[in-house]
Image 1: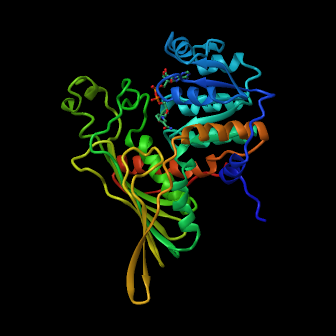
Image 2 (image 1 turned 90 degrees about the vertical axis):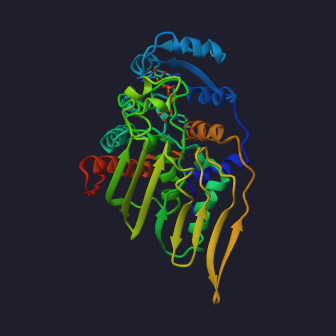
Image 3 (image 1 turned 90 degrees about the horizontal axis):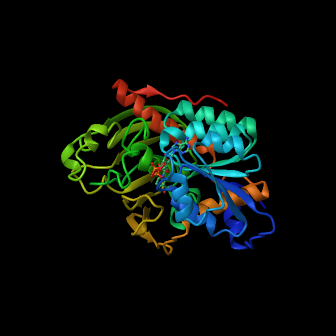
Length: 385
Ligand SMILES: NC(=O)c1ccc[n+]([C@@H]2O[C@H](COP(=O)([O-])OP(=O)(O)OC[C@H]3O[C@@H](n4cnc5c(N)ncnc54)[C@H](O)[C@@H]3O)[C@@H](O)[C@H]2O)c1
């Protein structure tokens, strides 16, 4: 039987999982903002996990978080570095900081020999991702990137269809989805400021859109990219009737598009939107020599869609199409993402969403930004680590 690893191994183990709680995995959370709540909620449900430390740069924020989440026993720190310097026995950390702090926090943790679950996007730039991967390699610790849609059976079906050969040789992939009005400012401006978000729609939902398509076709490397980005909505005070001052702070993209040549003679036609005068950029498409796949548009990218996948083929002299029934929506994707990380720590396993794949995702995001800023096509080279 072929050896299985990573996400496949995790999924197989999940089916027969009985949690051994005799030894606790000691975990910390770095950054106690919005998404850290989902991490705390999941970690608290695990009988073999102890959340021993919390850190946030904002004074009092981690203490308040500890109270809200019943984590009063956790030690509180004012930065990732302070937590790492003091927690010599910690096994792993969930890094839930805003994007521009992903790379430094991950590097600090890996250098200290701590396993890392890093929230998406991997980093802001390709250069940062490479530095994180160097620290990962040197440390020999697990680094997994927080793409919970990978845990979805419906998302997995996209890859299953491509791998089955039903589409033949894939030559074109087209990103879809996007939001008409969806600039995320629910708890402030960390997503939209250059200093904290670094990139906008690209890093928030563009990375998910890319992961869905690129994972399905085996993560081919990018060769060249022509990118475009704009910020017409985010910089307009009328967009935020309750907070017109946000427009001044907006320093990232709210729309981006691009054309990317990939290895294996595949091209990617990309677009993503936080805001536009349109309901959707359309469905995502995968075209192959024997069939085409239509993936319904989504604006939330939480890992599920509400309509079935459709496959387009030729049968004899007829063009036909058929639906792939949806599996029931799974509301445990976030828990499963964190569980897979904890299991990898306990069992000496591998990252379910490894940096070796997501560096390609990051190279495309970074290439789109750099090409857009230069106003011309650029070549992409991912350095060997
Ligand atoms: N996987 C998902 O579904 C999902 C959903 C939302 C957000 N995210 C990602 O999670 C990250 C955080 O998003 P958020 O909405 O929680 O942001 P947020 O701004 O609400 O919280 C981030 C927190 O990190 C803290 N922080 C920053 N640098 C730090 C450091 N060096 N040490 C300690 N604390 C530090 C900040 O003070 C802030 O409180 C983003 O990168 C975002 O893309 C993922």
